[in-house]
Length: 393
Ligand SMILES: *Cc1c(COP(=O)(O)O)cnc(C)c1O
Picture: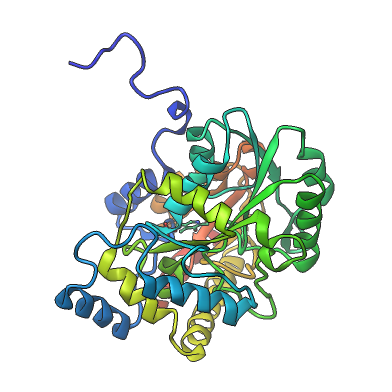
């Protein structure tokens, strides 16, 4: 029997409990509600890429441990992608590392770069694994809150500057940003870059939604800004870009020194993962531009379908410039507690959403906001919108 004289879960992780997604997905299953909580597509990615994975399996590519840094085909495809899209040149051998999804890249970067006691600045509301990974690394998280202003969530540059102390080690960025759907502007990124250079900070940037930007929004990797290439760890993933979230293929691009540091932690996490899928994603990254344009157009239409429906149902809607998610304010519906609202929504309207407060340390700042995912089939979104109409009645 395990020793029971103290809590089994260690102090670093005790505060995290189980994720809200488990609770809300169970609620969806129990009530038959449409699940717009968790952000995964309900349609698989390109058939030719699925076939590429099957071919890799059959031909015996990647069925045994692939090389630690990732298969050369994928590392070259990632390097070519960064060069073609952003003009960022990376040596596929020394400056690209394949990971088990962006999730492992985030964990490995923080475990490698953060010393116990170091402070890590992260944009709040944040993706749920950030807080846990900072804690596992022994770091202290310092949230800087994104706040709505004129229809968009903005980064308060004074607040960011004030958050930096002598113990700050790195800034953890996420753009396009989950859950707010904001895409950081060149001005915002320039300010972050200037601060990082001035205070000699590292930047870890989660760019898994790099291809999911709408209208005239532009995704700008902070590594492209002056002075940033060699102090930035850029994280990408195939999950969202190619609608294969179960394959868990992610990557890091960074200077040789930073890549080596992240690899030091990564080798003792999964060591390697997703062998055959790595070959398939190497092909996916070379799909013609029409694929990426088609993906964007499809998601943009879905964003509009759900955003318009939510507005008609009475929500205040922050129409996102990127990602899978639309954040709403429930106060126009006479509500103020997103948790209570989301727990009641399946019974009231047959839809599941996520209270943004779970992504905040300052829970009050997030209380009235609720997130809906639109990476679902059009008929599913139409049905959700029809159901949500009952809220307006
Ligand atoms: C989905 C998501 C991830 C996880 O990516 P995987 O490649 O599936 O591990 C990381 N960051 C953000 C912001 C996400 O939304």
